[in-house]
Image (cartoon, rainbow, N blue to C red; front, side):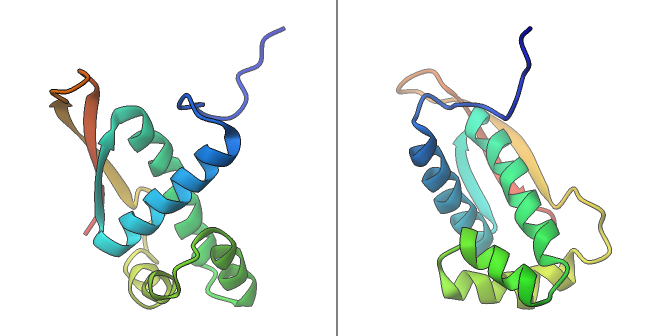
Length: 117
């Protein structure tokens, strides 16, 4: 019996995928938008929403959990000082994916992941 566990593999190893999502989430929280392929954008949306939901508790356990995923101290400070108060009243849906079209080089579908204002 086939069970569809997890998310997209994105044609990379699990360690590469994990570090790629960490780096993209760090860039998303730092610049509040990231342009990438559509499949990566959808995975980044899932990953970043989980980080923001964890951070909403705003206690020592939440800070340690976010520290395990986001390595940049400046971005961690921004998450807890700026983003958590902004999204405290929202029950999910902190990010939005906009389709941009097709990339010229390899015909890949591109998308913009943006934090909701």
